[in-house]
Every structure is written in C-alpha cells, then in structure tokens.
Length: 274
Image (cartoon, rainbow, N blue to C red; front, side, top):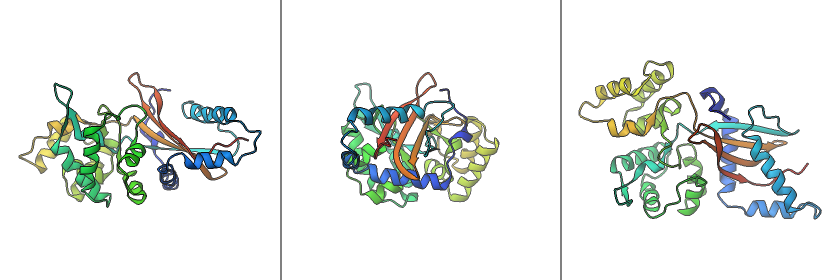
C-alpha cells in the first residue's frame, strides 16, 4: 500500500488512550498472551491462533480493509515523534559515537514528557553498546531492555520513538513541545513555528532556517535540519485493534525504501477466534 496523506494518520484522544493502555500491558512481555490463549477451549489449536493473528496483521496493510464483525481499528501517526537513534552515529571504523547536541535535545524532550532528564544517559548507554535498532526493534523493546518503570514508559510513548536513523523527524506532524525541544525554543515561539508549518508559511528547510536564525543568531542549524523533514506524509504509524471494545493488539508499521507500508513491531495481548 502506498504512502498515505497526513489526515489518514490522526487519532482521536480516545484511540490514543487505547494505544497507551496497550503499551502498558505489552511492556510485561508475552505472559498475558500465554495466559489468555491457554484458557481457551482445548480444541482451539495454536495453528488456528497463528492463522488468526496473521489475518489481523495483514488487514492493516489492505487499502480497503473490511474488519470482521465486532473488530475496530484506529491508527495514530508516530512520524512527528523524536527518534532516539539520532543520539548515536558511527565513525569511519563503524564505532558508535555520541552526539552531544542530540543528547541535550533528548533531555529537553524528557523534561516536557515530565520524565527525569537523566534517563537520557541510560538510553544512550544502551544504544552505544547494543546494535538492535533496526527492523523489528521498537520503543517497547528498548523500555524492556533498560528496565524503565511502566509509568515512565507510558509518558515516553507520547514523546519518542526508536527506528533506524534514516527515519527523520517530520516537523509538520510534530507537536509544539517537540519543536521547542528540538530547536531549543520557548513555548510561544514553538507554537508560532507549529502554525507556520501547518499553514505553509514555512514550506521547506530554507525558510525554516531563516525563522530559526532570527531566534538564535549565533547558532548553526544545518546538522539539526539533516534529521528532519517537512511533509504531510507519514512514515511510521501505530494501529490499535479492539474486539467488542477490548484492546487485543498493538501493531507498528513503517514505510520501506520503495514507499510501501511494512510491519515494524506487533504485540498481541490475545487473539479473537470467532
């Protein structure tokens, strides 16, 4: 399925709440899935469950999806969230190198998320020593690896994501708080920038650089802008599936190099079988 426009990625507050609830549960791993499926009637085999799970995963990628009865699907754009991979680059010998400017940004992001800024050290420490950031590794995996408390993880879900560095921060879809943290702007200037990005007053990096230079005359923004894009298109979304109002799956999808949606990371709490 080809890239969708920005309006297809917005989510109502209720759906965002559902996404966060799913995140909380899935951070405990797959214990819930095992417990739920073992309680099913013995005639329901694992093959049936796997087949049903694959069916729901495939529905997310169908352009004219028709959900089974009692199943609802809601999606949220994640393209406007800060990508934690920006904190680490690799030198000519393929060794990881910290980017202090980006670490400072993460501290500001964590501050507006009402999370301790010192968590940035724990995150960058993991990213410096592990090489798991790639297809199939997401924020929930990172939170499990560094043992972040659930209440902190819930807050982070609304602020950051984890993907390869090629997935840039989409400024058009970013919140004012994210824009303020990324470019070190006060709240009123960040709100002004958000409005300009939405209404097209700032349509590209050149005009954005002019805007930023007026606020930080001595700062060079070229490095920061390399990690960003100004676009109405999504490259990352999360989908919540519910059965009769009960959340049972959290599915992350990303745009691949040829412009098609592909699976990033899926979590099932349980699988409807009827």
